[in-house]
View 1 (spheres, helix red, strand yellow):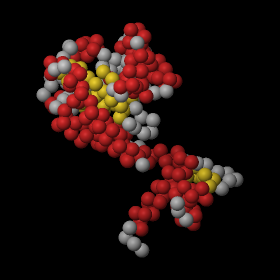
View 2 (cartoon, one colour; view 1 turned 90 degrees about the vertical axis):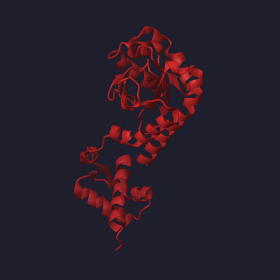
View 3 (cartoon, helix red, strand yellow; view 1 turned 30 degrees about the vertical axis):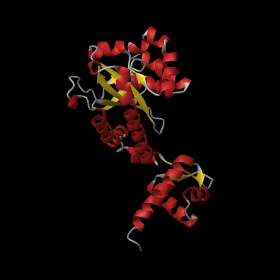
View 4 (cartoon, helix red, strand yellow; view 1 turned 180 degrees about the vertical axis):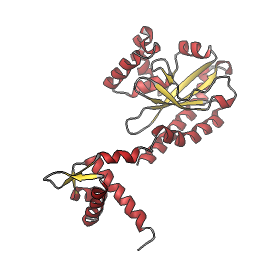
Length: 260
């Protein structure tokens, strides 16, 4: 037997379990077709999964479904931890290229959560706030996220956000939201609201955000923050935006490869 055979067996077993999880109830023949494996191999692997309690055979049928025990397989997986692991080198390289810090933010029901930030270590007197919940309609990361949602997703997100943030219940911001989101879709980026930045950062910075292509229905955004005294915003944007977008796309590519 090849020394690689145990590894191949595990890979095949995981492929079979994934097929049952994603397509169940499903018959052994269909599993074999999906996994491109001989049916006897699939039957043997399914029997192993049955014995382990990870799948069950439907009563009176020759089809299989996963059990609740499969949830235990994901208990050690923290999606934000994995996101940070993949994104951190890209965000740090972005700093080298543009000279300004960035935030990586993830949508979490009624707000954006800062999953990673390199602000504190880069000489700006702006504290890093990893884990902070920030509003949707007043921030660039929130606006690019809302712009990617379906109308119903957006309605539900805003309904939740209004209860938890005064910025997300601000009548002026809500009244102008449709046209601002249309601008985001057309341009591919969003600026944070200056009133929000004035209050939080005392008018010292401006921020621009782009979406991170993502999988598994996640909404992720990447923003860069610049001192207002650094120069004309349009000129700064022309230099920063291509690199910011490339970094976001790189993170999306890494996530896609990780899920595949």
